[in-house]
Image 1: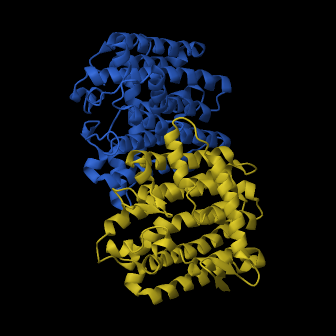
Image 2 (image 1 turned 90 degrees about the horizontal axis):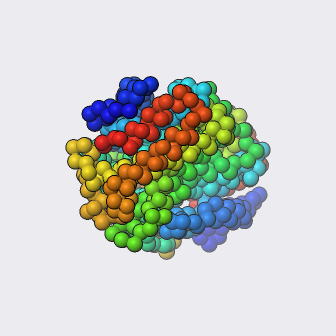
Image 3 (image 1 turned 30 degrees about the vertical axis):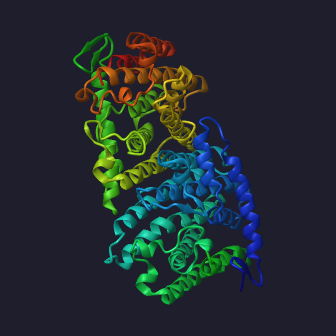
Amino acid sequence: MVTLGSQAVVSQFFDLTSYLKERQKLVEEALDQSLPIIRPEKIYESMRYSLLAGGKRLRPILCLTTCELMGGTIEMAMPTACALEMIHTMSLIHDDLPAMDNDDYRRGKLTNHKVYGEDIAILAGDGLLAYAFEYVATQTRNVAPQKIIEVIARLGRTVGAAGLVGGQVLDLESEGRQDITTDTLTFIHTHKTGALLETSVVSGAILAGASDEDVQRLSRYAQNIGLAFQIVDDILDITATQEELGKTPRKDLQAQKVTYPSIWGIEASREQAQALVDEAIAQLAVYEEKAEPLRAIANYIVTRKH
Amino acid sequence: MVTLGSQAVVSQFFDLTSYLKERQKLVEEALDQSLPIIRPEKIYESMRYSLLAGGKRLRPILCLTTCELMGGTIEMAMPTACALEMIHTMSLIHDDLPAMDNDDYRRGKLTNHKVYGEDIAILAGDGLLAYAFEYVATQTRNVAPQKIIEVIARLGRTVGAAGLVGGQVLDLESEGRQDITTDTLTFIHTHKTGALLETSVVSGAILAGASDEDVQRLSRYAQNIGLAFQIVDDILDITATQEELGKTPRKDLQAQKVTYPSIWGIEASREQAQALVDEAIAQLAVYEEKAEPLRAIANYIVTRKH
């Protein structure tokens, strides 16, 4: 495994950079087509502004990847892949609001409310969230209806108080407090970041008709990379520049947030992230070389620079 | 048809007051059970505060009523009925925010953000919206999966930019402007109020397996009562007291909003509302006495005092 420049990761067996680039292009095209602008134009423009603002598209790509791994097609998973990015975007728009994290920049651009105002930003988030469910329900083809319902149920649980929303609430409550335990921190991250990554991985498999055993194995893979992803995020908040991150760095320090590196230190946090990635990759043994994309993505999570 | 006191409506054939009371009780119980409090408690308390704050429960009741009219059962429709109220509640919480309509009171109680803060209120709305879809997907029994997906698709469309969100955007843009046309006003209301009432009526029928013809007939019923409902709302904003409304009256006047009564005058608005209700009731002829609850509800909409 060699790291080239800021993002390129080349394995002996698998070219992740090309893989991600190709999938990212497919996802960008699908997202662009998913949301035409009609009356009232302003809300669609606001939704598109954030939805098409770039980003790694890691969640949709994971969904497509596991669907193919389990014998399904990209077409079967694409509406859900788009929905995952709509949900992720909605959570970013709402988290950035003045009443929450009060962020001015995201992915190197002004945040939604800085461009469109708070009212429209709140509504753009609501619109994207609702559209995610509509999109899965109306656009998914060649999948058994029961599987579509299962994916919708998981998406709902992932966004709600049992997922993203619950994680954000505990995150807000924890701000400025120095007595946060590792347990609470892990609750925040498994809900705020982990849940959506897990649903991304698992929903692709469900759409392909994967067995319960496969779904559980991929869940464990996802839980491990989800936590590793957050630890690396916390580390990058300390070590990366604004240019690398595309958003304001050192927000956690300024907000006096307890993070993994603030509890364990940077070096031990890096080791912990690596251990989680190793554990994630161990789940994939049974899939042999077919799981190479998932292995490479897991490795990418700990080596990424933004 | 006789109006007794502020709400009681008794027809020769049908006691709407008892009917609404009995259904309201069923809905209240189902809503109460739908959302237990777990960690993090604050968000569940905030969601329950608004979800269980009373209200007429007109949307869930319409859903139950049309499901029964089309040969289905209350049990088949109850999860969707609850979801409709979760969505309605979410739209009220977000519309009341300082960045939007900035309301302090709703249903006679402090608005969500006045009690829990803006951040939690935004998240409570998000949580309720996500939970609505999860709830329909996980709790609906004895309904063909394809019908459940159809209802989820309609719910999504109803909340999103093509429904509530789009209506609210145009409403915000129209505030303080005196050049609003009747067309724009009707766009606002068919999206902001009409869409959810229509989905309430239609989703119950879809769950019961109604034919396309029945669904279309009930759609027209719903579109007419939806617009009548909004016209009466606008009239009540002018004529009702705070006590009757449970929220601040004369908000429209203060905000210099163009409304139906501001364009047509109160008397002509009342006549228009009555004409729409008559048209709604005309759609129901084919169902004979079985549609008596829907007729009584349509009449109630124009005679209600809050």
